[in-house]
Each structure stands twice: as C-alpha cells, then as structure tokens.
Length: 296
Image (cartoon, rainbow, N blue to C red):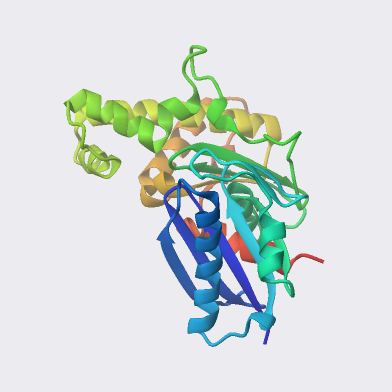
C-alpha cells in the first residue's frame, strides 16, 4: 500500500494529511503556523508529516508522494517559496529541503489557491473545461484552469486583491477581505474586539449598519465576478475560502447581484455558473493530494 502526504500552510494554521494512493483520507492534523523563523516552520511541517506516519504505523519508505500548498509567490517549477506575506519563507528551497527528508518520494509544491483550484476542478470531473476559483478569507485571490492547465502569466496571474474598486487608493482586498470587513465594523461600532463572525450574526439579524458594510462588499465582489465572466466565459466560477465557506448566504447574494448585471441576451443565465466550493476548508489539502497523484 502506497501513501501520500499533503500540506496546506497558511498564515494561521498548518494543516497536513495522510492519504492512500487512491485519494482516501487516512488521517489529518492541524497546528498553528510558525510566523517568524523559516527553519522552525520547516521543522513544524516535517514533524507533522512524521507524526502522521508514526501514529498510523506507516513506514516512511511507503510515502510515494508529497505535495505542499503555500500562500504568496512561488516558483512551482524550481520548488521555491519565493515570498509569503504571512510566513517567514523568502526564496526558501522547500522541495529540495523536503527531498533531503523524504528522498524516496516525488515532491511538489505550489500556491495554495492553485492547489485548491485543482481539487475543485477534478472533483467536478473537469478535464477540458475552463474554471475559475475565487477565494475570500484573510486576502482575496483567484486561479483559472483552462483545458486542464493553469493560467500563470509571468507569475502573478489571479492576484485580484490588487484590483481597483473606485479610486487608485482602494483595492478589492482593502474593501472585502476578512480583516478589511472587521476593520470597518470596529470603526463603525467603536469596538476594537469586534470579529467578522459577530458581524455576520448581526447581518443575519438585520442590523442595518452591518448590512451596509456587507452589501458594499457584495457589490464589489459581484462586479469582479462579472468581469471574470465576460472576460473568460468559464464553465464554472467557484467561490471558496473561509468567508464564503462559512457564509454561503454571501455566495447567493453575489450570484443574485451578478444576475442583475447580465442584461444582454447572450449573457442571460450565466450567473448560474457561480457555485460554492465542494471541499470547503479542505479544498487546499485535497487539491494538493490530487496534484501529486497526477504527477507523471
């Protein structure tokens, strides 16, 4: 029996999982991410992998593949973590370092959004279709797959957080990301401890002040999704990430508003291509496992 190790490393948590070669989950593990020391972060990753194997009685020689998804800018071909805003890695040779720990395994890494996109793409049975995955959490980003291949551009394709939403000083990320919404709520209610979770409770209860903040974000998101729809005409747009995953009402709100923009007969009904994530919070780690399974 062969096994696969996968990891989804974020600025807050480090999630790892042990899979069978057929994609079946054996065991998952989650711990806090190390934010200051690059070597400590690497050791946390290796220790988590080893712990999974030891606890499940799996020999390291039976690990056929390892895949790691991380945020920020990566050189997937060379296996280098180039720049991660919320992690300490800078030009860190992640694949090379993992190869020294697991020399018998094929190893790959990529941006975490790309990993999640692959997971959503393959679980829908897509192979030649065009799909866009948009993630909204601490930040906002997207990824496009066309005919089974990623659109990477020169390295930063999909960084829609930099999109302008009015003035040159207001980006999509500063308007709709989780921290941005919390900041607006804290200013509105003069409460430095107010969380997005608490704000969403107020939103569902009909608080008009919170609704104004959330509705502004929905409009900005809907306009971005509209632009993606008319520019790429994908078969599917998946809305994922922590905010969308925990609040599917926002997905429906975005879908409804996008529908109001689609006046032309050729565009009618395309809002139905907007879908929720299937894997939710597990999209990154399941996509990573799927990626390494498909390495030739």
